[in-house]
Image (cartoon, rainbow, N blue to C red; front, side, top):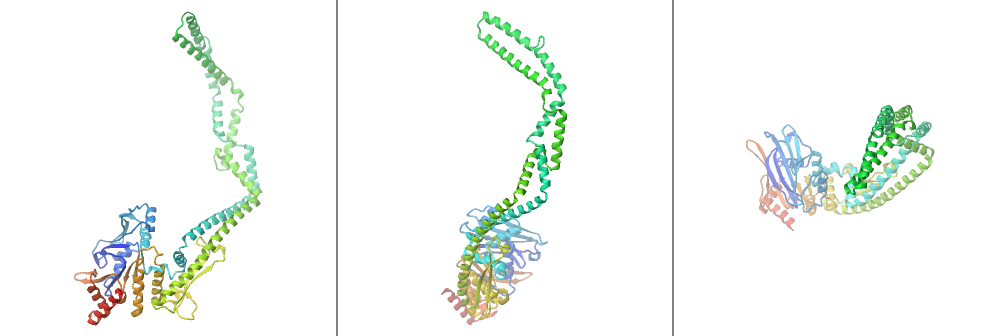
Length: 561
């Protein structure tokens, strides 16, 4: 929940630090005292739109910090922050901070780490819901009704199953359509593809062939140089007084010595000479083979050049390397095979698409059944709340319509959901914006929030004059519902209704002083007497009467009861 709000240089607020508590907190004060400024300041910290006009006159910069405390880390905001590499310890609060300069430049921070305003807004919307957004994002916009219904029915497992089935179906559909398009195009190019396959098969490129040909070309290109070098090596090794003769003479001398002297060193030397003689013989054999083996090459230099030219020309034609030609041949052969057997390929893909579609329809049908059941429960619970808000004649319908057109099915299922109301008996239920007045819509919103309490993971709710235009028993009913809602959420209410203020667990009074400049102040009421005096002011106006004080005391007593 919101535990601390620190405001610096926002319009009429110079410096303000507020400690927030759980339960129902009301904000009261004279019109123009600055209640809207307080909400604008909170909105700034939550990532809402910033304007340079918010900076207090004469100040270079303004800032707002909203601090939130959690009993545990099960709230989705922690997973969201972890995805953004913003680590929050279990014992650590979450601080949203926004600064704004007089020239309109601003910065956003989460726990003193710079972030984008869009991330700040995403995080802020998961922590605080300000009434006024609900019209823009909820009741008046049909596109959100499905989400509200699914959240109330806790349909997330079914939604996940539908989304998974939807993804599988779309992949199967796309593969089928892509294959059809490819085959249609290939059918037109069948003769050309067949020609290219035959050409590649005649050429028959092999893996690593280019490197092999380049080595052979280098060898053949240096034939004369190699032949001359080999002959010189042969002469040096086996010619007169060559290495072969020298080793033989040494072996003879050692052999004669060994006839007379049996010595380990002499034996080792003789064995080494024997090995040298054998190695020399093998070297001479290899030199002879290399020197006279060029005429045995399968390809001449001209043949190699022609082969390289053919391979390179083919590679240019297919926009690939010579090494990729075998893969290109296989790819084109597969295309040709698919063209020749396209009926079989399409049949298999159509079967896969049908199987995936049936799986999606099955999952969507189960979600639709749950939505219909949840809609009836939501209608029943909401209708139970409406009489207490003096809306007993209002009929509410949560309409779930199955979508017949498969092209309109989505990852969220095959249903359209709309919330409809009829404010008078005999009327046909219609969309909210057509029939509900502002006051009725505010009370419907409150009823919704009471019903959704416990399902909504947003810890703090803010209502800006939800009781506007109502009084007496209706205002008292609004206060009762706000109190009920505060059992599940921290609820902050800007109100002009003494009936609502009397039910608060905590009460702030907003006022402004005028000296050289105008400054807004917020004063928490700490005693029952202070609270009674403020409610009496709300009842009677500037001049507080004893009758007003008595009425205020009675309202406070009724809240305690």
